[in-house]
Length: 527
Image 1 (cartoon, rainbow, N blue to C red):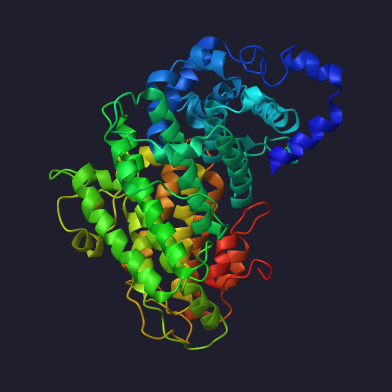
Image 2: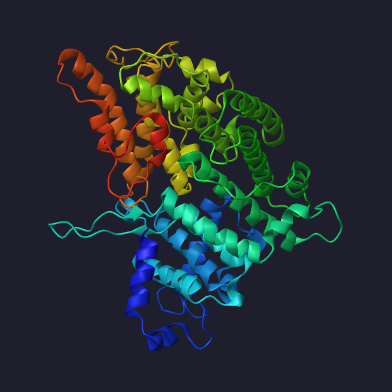
């Protein structure tokens, strides 16, 4: 919640004269941009835009490439959107320089960019004007949720600079998405669901509005799946979504966004079916229907977005979202079982267990070379070999939205926790009843060991040579999950081994929001 703390500090410290001098006679955020402040040159700003559109945009395509790729034009129209895109690009300023990027990818004026961004948020929230309610501002909110600013802590005792930490957590995202929804509804963005995208006269503006609206809906629903926070938006009808994605003026990412929106609709139907918008009371029948719809979605959209020659499309959005949706939905009924097993109660494992385990495995395995080989996935996944990194897939993960870092580290913790609670064996086979005895040592050649080792290598690969990458804090989480597997060998030789609760508690560092682990039987308050 660093943004809110900064807002309070600025509000208390800024006099009216300071505000007028900083923001100019126009009020609002008219002059508060990095170039006008002398922090960036326009050449630097355009380079940051190029980084964003070449490396980040396709991972969450809410921007309009044809109208927003030129930094000068966006600066003139919306300083807030201009700063938001610059701030994202500034994360990866030196990513292509193997010498300078060995310690830091961030732009040298990154902290100053964050300060300007916080000032713009303050202006929007404390002194809004009617001119601030625009599509560009809603889009800027979305980008700042998906690639939030990084904050620097206090320096170490030796004077060394503290590693930056992402602001992303569920509470931060939920707060900003609520503000974005208010802005969106004020400008009638919810009317996108009623537009006939097959009609004459539908152009760039209508597509841009729908692009932002669908991204808004997907983030809103994502927070339901991660933290059980209630969503407030519903996806448009399927025929409207598909007409948008196949429009002659659509961007390449629009069809993928249409596919993602159909996934959101599946989750929405499950919420309506079980009568709980938070999905915490998802019943067996509603879950079975959702799983069947997810399977059908995968078949249909593999034909739309895939090819007979390659499985590479399954390593990109919206198939990455498919795996997370499967995991999140099927993890819900597993929580009660894990809670009982942690108290030594033998209980039947839920029918959703196999789906959840496979989804967690696939979420991590998708970054392997074996995942794109021209053979059956299950056959390749079960071979007794080390999984090899697909560096094309890894390169996209380097620029992924911050929520991806959470979901992938969660998948690793999920599998280790299931093993500890006696729900699965080391080959990821599900037990019909939870096992009451301590888990045995994990063979290095087992599927569990290999996939957790591979998960650790994913985060190692992303963070290698990038001390300031936001994945660093999640790298520690996955490394501890791998370390936990080694503890079972220690426990088999020495009864004084470390318990998984002790190891999991070490993951709950201050400010990290793992609220959804409550559904898996792990108490944050007791950790």
